[in-house]
Image (cartoon, rainbow, N blue to C red):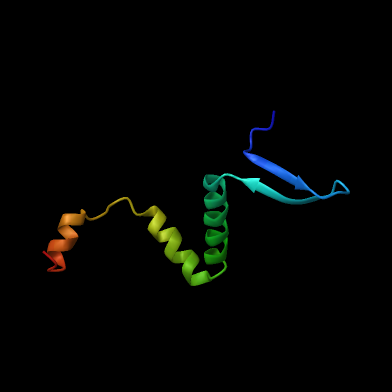
Length: 70
């Protein structure tokens, strides 16, 4: 049995013309495509890599207070 939640749709000649897949898998695919698109830009690639290496964040409540949005 196939592990991927994909169904193939064929025409009268048996040629695969489309697929049906879960929304979860579709969102994963879109996410990967967006990441690939962003990585094409050198500046964006550096920003993404820097963000990925950051391990320290700011708590939401702290950010709201610092921005004066309380």
